[in-house]
Length: 287
Image 1 (cartoon, rainbow, N blue to C red):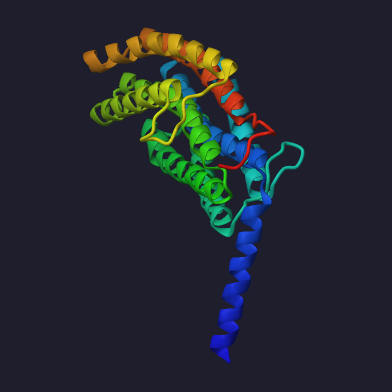
Image 2: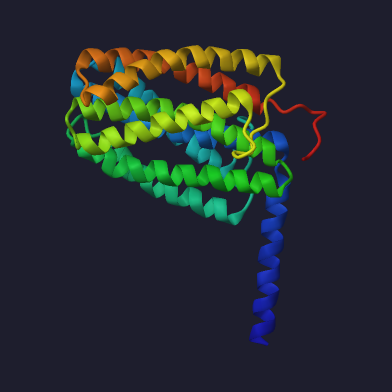
């Protein structure tokens, strides 16, 4: 009897999960992927802003940006957890994603305390609490991508994941350069900077030209092509500065200030590309 009840419970749970997974439309998956991917970026952007305050770079401006990004992250996280009809964010499409978002919420609480410490947190706390949040936020995006593929929207999930990751990488490189300028575990920060630079570059080329290996088709949209050309021009300028840091093995306040300013332009351009990718053609069929 117990085995029968267990079997019935398992079947009911599976059916509920399948029902939830199939409830989201392609447009809703695109929105959820965009928002979840943006959380990765905000985790790094907030860290960079905190560190720039430590470096004495535009302290009032960066503190205000940090406060705004904290509010944006918290609002988006709540929207992903419960769903936000007004924002077009669907509720978690399956139980696995719902549990994963709960894990992100726990990690966010730790990072938030460090960010809101009024500068009392150490530079090391940003990596200590920020890195796990980025890792689990990225895992959330991967789970949304997999759920989208299961629902028949594989290309949508993959492209938006990769395009959205570019936003995060632009801010991660900025954050690592701040850590290098603060001489905080410089060897590790240089290694992470190099990895982020290589991943941004390979992903950028895949988005520009298409990549069978990464599952990214070459875009045929004139609007996206135009936007990627803008990203390309900004990336070349940004990459020059990043390469100088990697070659020198160091960064000063002047270099960080220049990189931070350019990173905002690169962020805006990559964010616009994600939005364009997320505008699902209503006539497109599931692939």
